[in-house]
Amino acid sequence: MEKHSGQIIEYVIRKKGFNISDLARSLNINRRSLYNWFNQKDLSAAHIFKIGNVIRHDFSVEFPELFSKDDFKLLNQRYLDNIVVSTTPQQIIDWEEKYLRLLEEYNNAVLINDEKRLLLVK
Image 1 (tube, rainbow, N blue to C red):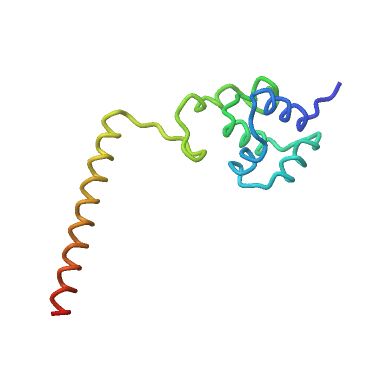
Image 2: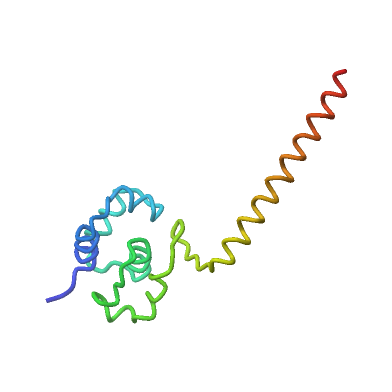
């Protein structure tokens, strides 16, 4: 019996409880396109891989002929808008400090600009 890629993908998505609209949005496609993918017997490896990354599922189990375990090894890292982000606690602290420093610089620039405008009005 031949595999129907689209049906397998749809089964995994529904089994994991993903909302189709949210998934389509995460994939930057419309719902109709996603439903069309479900109807394709031979869905491209690129589409399967993209879905796997979004729903954090290792499709090398269902499609060993297309993927190896290593293809999905980054799934255990944090995802932010479907982009892999791997940060250490120190990096988070560094980014927070940079953000606060930039925010203070911005606030100071706004205050200086407001003071200049007040002087021009007088």
